[in-house]
Length: 486
Image 1 (cartoon, rainbow, N blue to C red):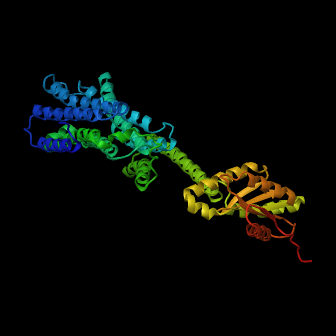
Image 2: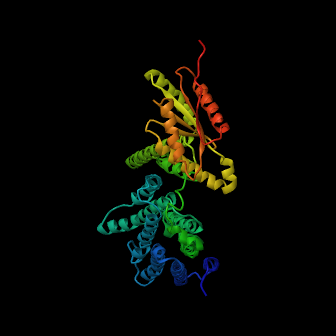
């Protein structure tokens, strides 16, 4: 019988709770932790088998990372009790550290399949978070360790590898969450697994800075069980994520779902990362001795440049969206032609150019005949298709200088610079001839007299249109000449 997400989560919870009551012997403790870790790795592989071949590989890496880390617990117990090896580096450290490159490879594969690596917004956000946290890792973990003998250097490199591995996972996970692609409970469960892992690593760092983890845990053995349970919880959460039916969504591309937006949570996280350097500087100033000045300067400068780059990207995005909004506000959604707003802006300018250049200019109003009957007979989708086809056909007959716009409903307006009555009538005649689906239109044509306003010119064309309809439709009527008062 295949194991489900809920069944495994229940079994893992029971195992982690039971771990708190095990006999206080190292072998019982280590064996239980290894068993939970190996069970989680097996569950991850079982979950991966339910996915397509393409989607399995990242979970294989996660399973390998959990298996290595859990195995390291057993190796550490053997190294300590059998070989007496307790100083860094121990034979268990390669197994513990194996978690980081394995999980990093799995996350990197998910990023590659879900989104483009050159998603600069996501990269900048991930870099900002990692830079801020990286300063803490440098100040409290990496730099304070004394480098003495050659063995000390190796021990220092081993100890520094853990926070560096955490930083790598933070950077990749932030990049994954900020990018595009499918989201769901599997993604957030996997993020929780990594978050719990980082909490466990950070807890050891805090204990070391408080006077040494070994001495503190010797006085508070229950605290050691709690910290070890944190890592067991991380193992279990990886397995729960793999067994989640939503795990298949993790491989979906950004076309299926856009990137995460700059919401309140992300804004708080980025703000916190940016404030780490000044907060650290303030604490050292308060203590009366700035010991990490150059590190703080480097971090502050990097975060500042990242924030500038992020703001620049936001400005460009706002400008792009504003340009799209302006274009949409001046174009008809159905036909793609200029809309009434664009026409009302362009007509007065065209008349002013004609006045300046002393050229003739004509305006036509076109109305599809019996369009309501067409809609009632064939349906509104068919009516929309007719409007799109007609506007495209009419546009193809016009000159480069002409303009056609949708005035509303089935009514269109045509601007014909340099056209007199005869030429304007010919242009409208060509449009009438190409009207699709054996449909016809009625049209009114008016030539500008050089003095009237755009509203007056349109009114004369509209009057001519009504005469065309009254005269039997499927025809073009020219407006009577307009005479201004002396």
